[in-house]
Length: 145
Image (cartoon, rainbow, N blue to C red):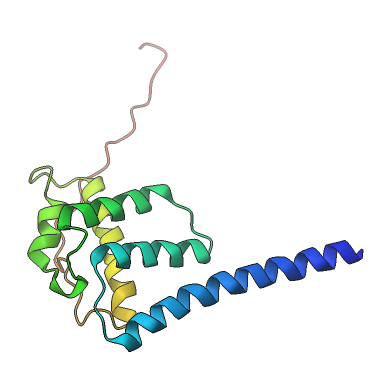
């Protein structure tokens, strides 16, 4: 193999490691400093983390930033309650849809990530979920239609 190939490969590996180190160093500084994070800082750190492991889903990013704006970007992560999460999930009415369940799943991932890093003591999302709506059965067209 050519020297250029190996140099490029080593450079990409170093770039990946620098990203990984900077993200984890930032989290370490927050954890050891004892300062609590705002929801906006937490969401941005979570998005950075997900991008560092190769996830590039825009809908999750949009939903998390929407949640941060809904709660208030300066709100501390530890002060978020289950009623705040319910208010966000039920903001479009009391109708339970697949969208509701996807939003719940996104919030659950965020809070589980924060819990695993010691940023919060409990996960403030609803434990008991409403039943998801059934899918509509596919309509099979016939030649007579």
